[in-house]
Length: 116
Image (cartoon, rainbow, N blue to C red; front, side):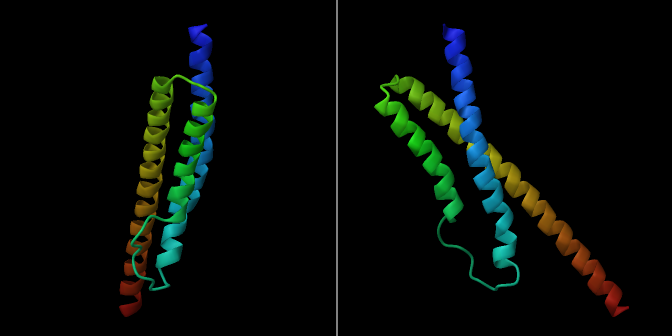
């Protein structure tokens, strides 16, 4: 019985992380487009996609609580979900930063070629 519960918990986390990771990936990848040529000031508060991703965790906790799940289990699954979301965010942010750096390097090389 405990094995089945563990499988269900794993599936729940996988599905929630899948939804959250899509939102995070989309949000993070849009950052360079938003600020590159627009000369907008740097953000002073979290972007909406962060709140959207965190809403997934909040909704999970509310549903689990209403369903009378064990509070320790809710806390553990919630922490696992948050950890997964942070990992997803960091991975996507690193990819975007790498891409921006490569683009910057290419533009500098192109600029130097044009000056010669």
